[in-house]
Length: 149
Image (cartoon, rainbow, N blue to C red; front, side):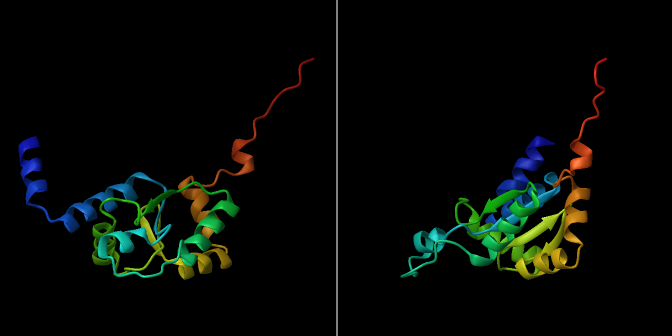
C-alpha cells in the first residue's frame, strides 16, 4: 500500500501535489485563508516585478475582519510557501478562483474578500465561524463556579 502511494506521488505533477496539499489543509482546519503577505514570490521566481506591494490589501481586510471577530484560522502565505505558485494554480483549478484571498470555512469555499465581507455584512459569517469552532463565544467559555460557604 505504501509503495503504491509513493509511486502515485512520484507520478504526480507539482500542481497535483499542491492540490492534494490544499485539500488536506482545508479538510483538517475549521478556517483556512490562502493569501499573499507580500509579493516576494513573484520578485524571486519570475524576476519581472520592478516594484511591488508589501501586502495584498484584500488579504489584509480579511485578516483584520477575522482578528476583529476573534476567529482563529490557518493562513497559508502563498508567497512564503516553497510551492506557493503551484498551490495558487491548484486553487485556480479546484475553485475557479486564482486571486487571493481564497477563504474556506468547514471545508467549503466561501470566496474571496468581497464574498467574505458580504457574508459578514449579511450576518452569516459569525454564525458560520462559530459553528466551525473558529470563534468561541463567551457563553461557551464561561465556567460556572459555586461560591464557597
